Structures are given as structure tokens and as C-alpha cells.
Image 1 (cartoon, rainbow, N blue to C red):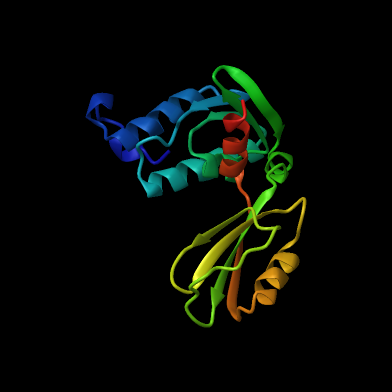
Image 2: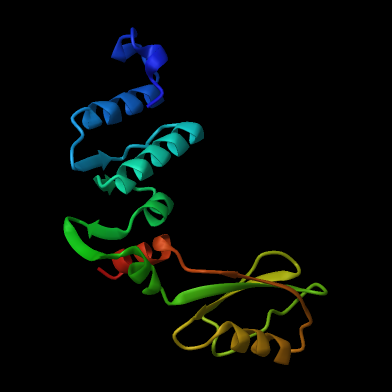
Length: 183
């Protein structure tokens, strides 16, 4: 846990990040088969976060089951094989990560035009349109009803010349918000 140089220091004199490392080290001292981490990266710097997750991955690869509670959804999405979401004390999801993310139906396409667009295109397949700047809009659509090709065809039918397209895939945050906003 990179604490060797602090071996003679009192725990109360350690920085917040060092205290987090110490807590994980204390939890691991007996090589438990299950490690429960409650918000382990809250208030730590980027480098410590990276080191901690690298260590947790090593432990998991060595057979340690890691139970993680976190509000950092991007970390959960990247690190966890299975995710449970609890909302107001009620379990609203408990699935493999990829299956849970696949639930998200809204997807976005960011379209940049060759000139300023006064009136953004409209089509029944668009769920939402947001202007990002004079030449770029974000179109949100439901991937269970239409695909990106159909969305772009609708934009072109409106007479707009497209110079760049980027897509944004749904992520765990999208799924989380859809689950907790309907419950």
C-alpha cells in the first residue's frame, strides 16, 4: 500500500489519502476471502485512486471477492462485474454490469454542421434536441425505436450538411437515473 516510509508515523498524523491506504491495509492484514470497501476513494487524489484500484484489481484476480459501495458510478462501471443499486433502502437492480447498462435505451449523437444552424432539424424519432453551439447539436433518441443511421438521415432530409458526428453511449449513470427517477 506504499506506506513503508510511514511505518513510524502515528495514524492521526497521516494525510487523508494515507489514512485510506492504512484502512485498506488493516482490512487486508489477515488475507480475508471477502473485502468490503465503503467509499474507499472519497476525498483521495487521482494518483492514490489509481494505485488503490490497481491493488484491488490484483486482489480480485487472486480470488478475493470485493464488495464496493460507492457514489462514483464511473468507478463502479469500470471495476465491478455485478452491480446492485439500492434506492431509499430498496434494491432496484442487481445484475451483471453489462446487462444493467444494456437496459439504457437513450443514446445521443452529436452532429456538427458546415455552417451555423438557426433552426435545428426536427423529426419524430428525436427524443430531445439540444444546441451545444452555433454549429453543433446533440440529438437524443431511443435505440430500441430507431438507429443512428435513421437519425442522421432525418437530419440530412432537413437539408443540413453534416461535417462531423460523435455518439455518446449510455452509461451506468443513465441507468441509475432512469431507475431511481421512476421508483
